[in-house]
Length: 100
Image 1: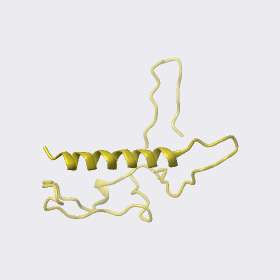
Image 2 (image 1 turned 60 degrees about the vertical axis):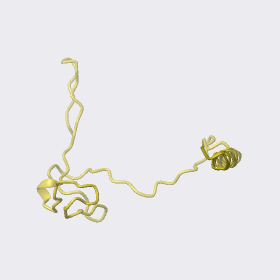
Image 3 (image 1 turned 30 degrees about the horizontal axis):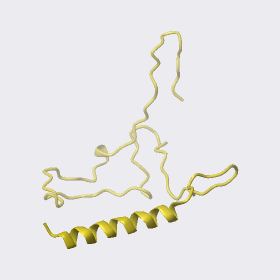
């Protein structure tokens, strides 16, 4: 076993963990404070069977393995990508939910 390499790896790991611990601090937001800003979202709230928002989503078309030997071929046909609304089904027959 190469002890010099093991020693170097141990010192490097210790230094990295020390730096991470020293700079982490408290990342939880305090009352009235916002630390995160939403930069992108999609609620998929279009009508059933509609395509996802083309301004936000693009098709990856192709095949031939894509670097990991996949056997699928990806197309841009709308029937392969559509919005389908899901809703909760109650377990109790006394409670009725309606879809809005």
